[in-house]
Image 1 (cartoon, one colour):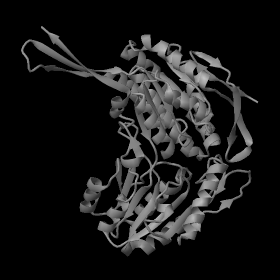
Image 2 (cartoon, one colour; image 1 turned 45 degrees about the vertical axis):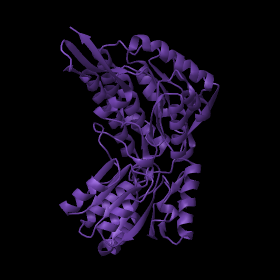
Image 3 (cartoon, rainbow, N blue to C red; image 1 turned 180 degrees about the vertical axis):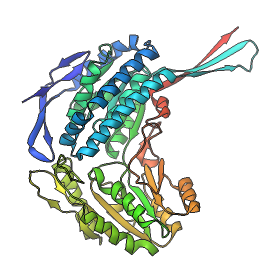
Image 4 (tube, rainbow, N blue to C red; image 1 turned 90 degrees about the horizontal axis):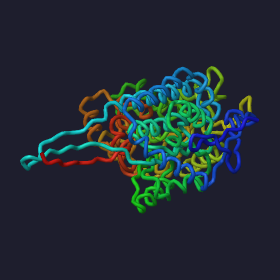
Length: 477
């Protein structure tokens, strides 16, 4: 069986153990055995990044452009191969896996351009004979901890800006999806980066993640994952004076008003709530529907769900692949059962068998729910969505904002007045009108508010806020 090593200081390094990478569509299919590092190896990677920063911080914009553009070009050229691998390890359908791979490539190419566009300001002082310059500089060593649900896109939108702005990287991918991370690291290893600028350290959060969080040699840490882990990381990194950024999930509302186009609304709900097996932090897991359209919406939505094909991620015609692993499937089923016991009416949601052993679940739509029910308070992270019936747009907005999260929010309406009001008053970092809440562009900011996010936004030009520090210099003529 193929074994895949960590990448530290420009060398491929054995771990202290290995872990099999299991295909959730077919648990007899092992993609390979991937190295598991301990805290000691993580500290070696941090030291290598610190040493490399002395020269990489002085690299030219052209050097950084060349590296990132080459990485983006290779990912694009290999999109079918890498997309298939992604689907095998995470469970996305092939079209979704290829689409995510293309997005990762475009992120690298976008930040290649940003490396050339880093600017500053030359401003007059309030004092005569003094000039003032304001410019950005790299932070140093950046630790990156990525989740399993977007195995190449989220690493791309962390790694690319970190390198574009002159930082060195220690990257810890999620344990469930090391193949995409390893492939990306292998491409980066041939991109022209000096040794130590980029390091891949696969392993457990309790070992590798803990070392990155605690080390004073890690100047900044970017994390995407669960709320509980994110809050601990924010507290620990901030306590030692490090810069920290965390994306921690959502309980995103999709409001459907009486005047909505029914087909548009159902498509937005189904795409947001159930595609990518619902394993997206931007998924619409709370669908808030006004009374006049409620019955037609629910009936049409259930009709759509009946037609969706749950199956092997690589099979043609599969609409929804498997849940990522047995633990996630058990969690999904537990939340469906809780919703039923609290009075919800459940359509679908059962675990099912297919031609290969895997973690398959039918999409679940839970109607008759109230805002206080568990299913409407806690993030499930699976193909499970609830419907809350409300009387009017005012109640819909109030219920939409009644959550500790604030990542994405959507509204389906043909009223410009209602759409404008919702864009202004929805307590979320991203708002969609007549679109799925899941599905964002790579060149604009990504992030939320309240319990969903901490620190500066990710992606687009706003990424510079996290991956650089601002310096002001004064010169007397």
